[in-house]
Image (cartoon, rainbow, N blue to C red; front, side, top):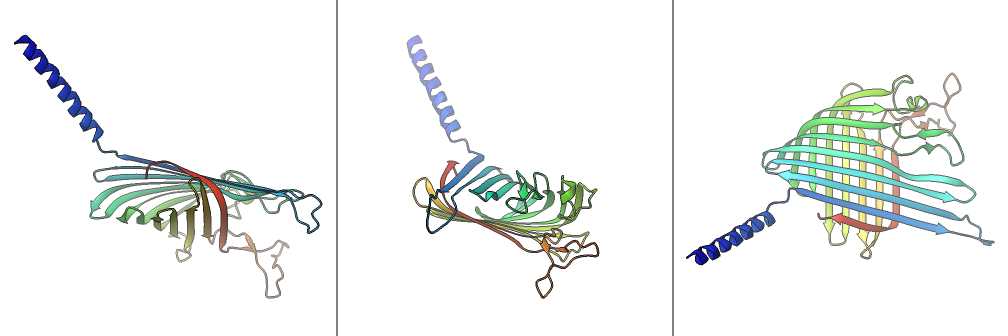
Length: 305
């Protein structure tokens, strides 16, 4: 009897442990983590080349990290983008080609169907100084010059896994310019490190994935209630990648920006002459900014989608 009871107890314990292990194995995974890395490099060397030309070396790197937590009606998404690139032309000097640091965070609570009550946060700046000319010393941007941070509340519509449309009727935005010499260029007064903007924001995020082809876009439209609300600020990024082999991919990244507060273009008259003010300084006006970066890159993605 004792042996039978002992055997029964052992079997029961084994079944209990097996059931617990199976239950733990089936425990839902609330976190999703991915990290996409891209590194592109090229080099040209010339010696007594009759056709002429310049030797050069270029390097660009890009990290795109995503962290998502989703449980019941709550969803929290985080995305960090860091990119830096340069071209070193022998005899001409160092040229920065890409420089970005962008952090996006969004928390939402499902209200009904595919609509979420949401809070959205953004921070962006650049990592190093940018210069007006290759050999010049005049800085046109730097770390925290400028830097933008914003926090808004609104509604998030998520019709599919890869599409999000966020409308935030109340957004507080801060423009920070650490370097006093650059503050006027980015809309701040010379003695104003921080400038506030309060307005409405519409943000669209979308991605298409077809086998080895991926295309993603992020479009942000912002209207400042306090200063010319009809002058819409635009920030539009596109990232396209096509895998050539397991570790090589052709990538294209573009950025388009329009901000009426960023005055970086010299005003010219119909004759093409620069217009100056009473003190003889060029009059600066805003304009559309566009950047495109394409390369064949080593790429690898960590984590699961």
